[in-house]
Image 1 (spheres, each protein chain N blue to C red):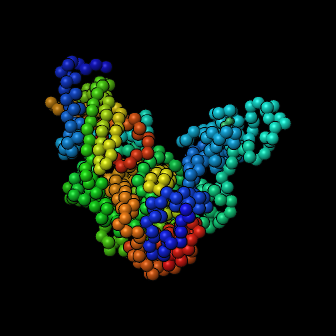
Image 2: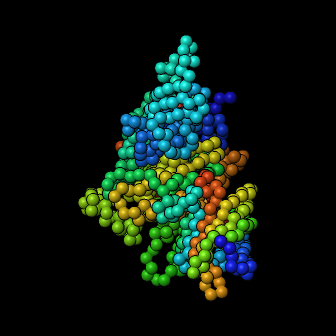
Image 3: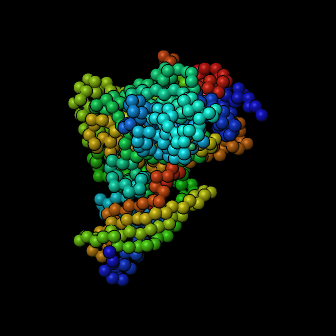
Length: 161
Length: 434
Ligand code: FES
Ligand SMILES: [Fe+2]
């Protein structure tokens, strides 16, 4: 499926770039506001996972849990954030997956470099953003992050991907 | 070089080397993991004939597999021909037979050799295909307690139920909490890599007082979140299971800790049984099946983590088992299995997964601060800043129990109890835990 035109493509690309930047700059409040009230942030535990209610996930966070995580990251005594995790996202392959009346599903790929304390880790995968149009703005109904190594044993995953 | 283990363990303190010396780690694999009953998995993970599930017992790769006679066997995952691992890591179905990928030797699901290609090639050779050594080796002893499968690499030793002692009741309650009296593994397995010695993780399981300090970031975030909700909002389950860590030291003091022989123990439930609609519907389902009196009896056994030393920690009230797999002296893998209570509403299992996701997973809000603490301990112990690790708190104040001892919640009885067991496996004396 194609974008309607260059303008729409540009619009969505800018939205995704901005979202990634908010995360990389730890602007959690602004990031939280990108979601619809019933929006879900989901990182499945296994490949092709279809169910987040009856299967464990890496992240499965509604508004309450997203906000709790953001608050925790900001606590003075978040010891595992001494020093804070630093990240940079590189996005690519942005394409339109499907379109509905209210919005669209956009697929992109990402490379996430994470640094904390003494070590750099790399994550990669694809993201499905289910976006809803609200006036001039886009809102996230679902952000599904499909890690290439979702089912690997992981050390702590603290920040949103 | 021989190690003077005796010099490293005293009743109230241990030498840092027990956490940092790779040679001691190797000895532990032989003596602790080579002798104790170790948790393998749950029978529901291999429901049908030929179903298998691989794991490790200490250093040994093993496979749990269901045989045609219905029995669950635990075999070394090693072909008797040239040594290939017979089934790949993970779980699946082997069909009726185990067939080695390398030269096609075939075995029954109890490990016995069924056939080899080119049989004629072995005629008149010293290799006797009927001999036991050409079957897949069985782990020395296997036993199951209400579906929880344990194995021991040692030929001799206590029966499983004697070994479990007072914590057998935790496994019983795990199942009793199901309206149908049975549980099954479901919903995937979470895996966390920790940069610490395995004993540090075990000791933390009943280290009640760290919660208020270590987890300040998560319980404060949960409390603030709740305070920002409109007045009168019932406390969401997500908040209950996180802000509980922020209870003051007096709260933990009042909890009872029990320690049993062989290093086991449990800690009383720290959550008042939750009263969210999902939890209430579950209680109703249990009452409907078991009657009110029996349901009450079952739910009154309210435990936080149980320690089944040295291999796993069941959480009976939210249905998970964490399996502890030492990888090296300073790396440990923890695997978290979630269980479904048979006969309970679907939403009960979803609550279990919520607990797994929020509290135990690598991405939980609680675990990262634990991992940070463990890692700082491991790094600090490697330093020259001191030699001993203290376990003095509450020493000399334990109360005797049949097969064990109890203490108040702030006591360091649990690590003393675990080290008494450790010393006895390792062949040294600490004196008793108390
Ligand atoms: S190694 Fe298994 S058949 Fe040869
Ligand atoms: Fe903790």
